[in-house]
Image 1: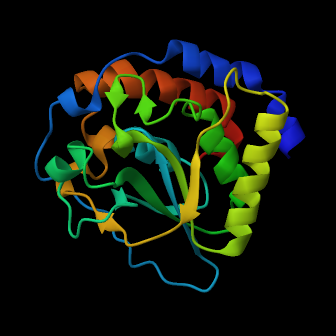
Image 2: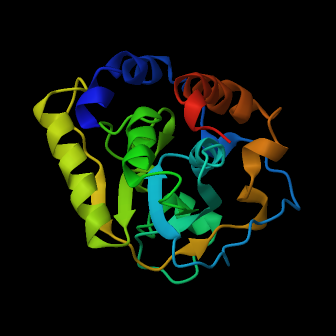
Length: 219
């Protein structure tokens, strides 16, 4: 799986080179967005929490993958209790903007989730994605079990060893901690605000490349 993915490095580089410098924090927010439920139950479902810059981008990508049952934007990895978006944006709470995925491993493998993760953001820029700068935008995998940890470490180690990216991967791999759900207007953002400047300038070009590359994995 890893070797097959490495052959697709041109897609990765195109995202890195084509990433537009436009800040998530400067986008216009729309109120009253519906929050997706996290109350999915079933022994066959698993959870993973990922940070890859602005959570609007991450949410839009994973919502379209077959086997992903829910995607919730939120905050993880900090010390402050019940942080707000404004708190996290200061970069002082220690939290990362993340999306928590609930998925069916019988339909989508964790390997595929990681493959999408590495290919839809730049994991080599420390505390930054494009014009979004700060520890809250760091690349991070918050694992929920040892199997996820081992797989994430193996991918990161091999990609670095084979120099798939021009620079070393700096993605944080940490045990999942308390997850705080983001405000309602952050949920389902791209789907309901696709005409907003940030969505058009940053998210849409990334989505177009993602949809083309992973068309066989889409809902």
